[in-house]
Image 1 (cartoon, rainbow, N blue to C red):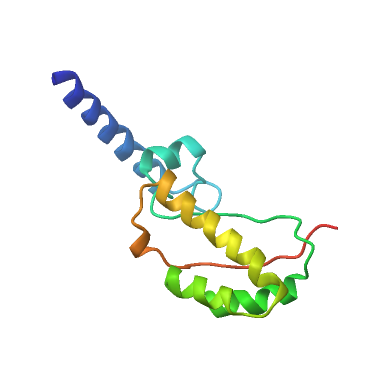
Image 2: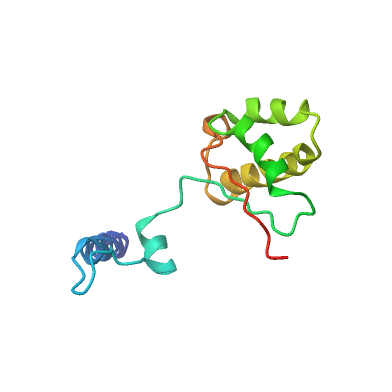
Length: 128
């Protein structure tokens, strides 16, 4: 029990040190320091979201953006309904992508499905 308390105290100290490093001013530029993956994990950054990325889809980003604009900011159930009844080629692809993001949020980060919504969605051009 004493070891658990000590480990929690050490984790809090590491967290505070990491926050101090982030907030400290850099000598040469005004940009904030970039966090490494281990620092983001210690601070718990990114634990409140589910994320999915689709690459190399054989569809124009312009056509995908039309459907993405419909679901931005919507509740997850409402976004599913919109995607299901939108007669566009990209809606089926985005439906699967939204399913994957939901699964990542619930399984990896332990979030409640009822509180999920589409916070951010964008389509960029591919390299080809």
